[in-house]
Image: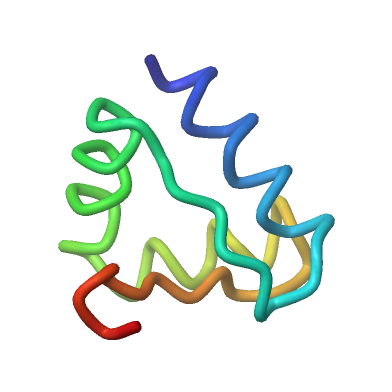
Length: 61
């Protein structure tokens, strides 16, 4: 499951910020869990993707 999350995040990082990519439920759960530690999430994003991947709930669209 973590590999699928990483691949999804790679996909998010390689596309324009305004492109809506919807994760599957399992990836969303891993993402939400990762976001519980914002300092670690930010550091991981910078280290792995060279930018922070913002998370937006679909209700915000």
